[in-house]
Amino acid sequence: MAENTNPKAIEFYKKHKFNEQEIHLFLKYLI
Image (cartoon, rainbow, N blue to C red; front, top):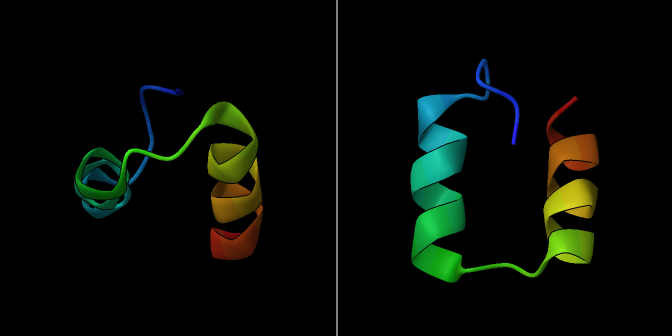
């Protein structure tokens, strides 16, 4: 993941443990 990723997004990601494909979809959704 990019270093400039939103800390809240990282916390959310860690809680939910998405797979890589889901991470990409989630990051697209944030933009």
